[in-house]
Length: 437
Image (cartoon, rainbow, N blue to C red):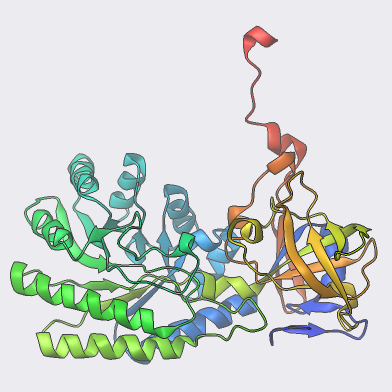
């Protein structure tokens, strides 16, 4: 079935149009495999998400999660919209700084941050969400070394089950992230930090998982987090300025999935926070959200050229394209579904079953199985949808394949924002030892 979201069009030639650009012409101009990002869709998604919360709460900071897609052009688009940044590495932090996002508008998450990364964060006044007791001591030492107070929160683990893939469910007690709430470990972390000279305790953070299309887990997260915030105030006298609910709002990938409107999440979450603030006598905190996938996923497609087709009796025909798990690993890693069409024959009936495979020497190298497409021919252009989040970000050089190029499109304009890797790019860090010369 043809599944096109409203920001896509079809032109008179029967070609897919993204951001006012003919997908076939983009492939001819820039080559394949090619990631294409629609700037206006990124802006629309951000504005809708931001508006959902600022219309309901007086102080909101939306920090785009760079892990989803840290391309500088994408980051610059979001910086121009006023977004903050959620970073999980020193290089992501540097990307955010490079496009003009101030450190005070960033949060730094992760279960292991190196000393150089922490130094960069402290120097730039980034809010560091501490993940374990040893990291707390390290941050205190780093702050002493650089001569500044470190702004910190603690990532807590609220033990909430979410309807998502186990690999991206991060709020369960058995996951690697955060301080345990139930045992009192999280409360103890705040107590220890309150005694440290070079530490300023300002926030609390939780993240319960990714690709969530049900509002109930977000509401439950808010309840558990606010109960802990109240306990921290009552028992330790610490008033937290920032309540960070993480990210996790998903996007519909399959034809059957329905979007979870950010307005619905905001309505339920904010009611919980309002009630807690009023009943517990808390000062009005700044609410931090960390969307990634919701902002960028459906704003991008991957274009791949069909090389060959293969008929085998009793099973769907195989279509081999020039993008595989090196370019988009989510289907192989998570069993994730990404919708596939033929961009140059978008109006033709999808009448035949195909398996769509990449060019790598792996049986798991596929982009989709048992997909209905028109009769596919060599030279056709496959389009894989909703790849903006964790597509290029998780790409690799498997079998020495260069990673794809990326273009940004906007109202008919297209410009390269990431060059295609070359053979020299692949080997420029390799060295042959002297004894083999």
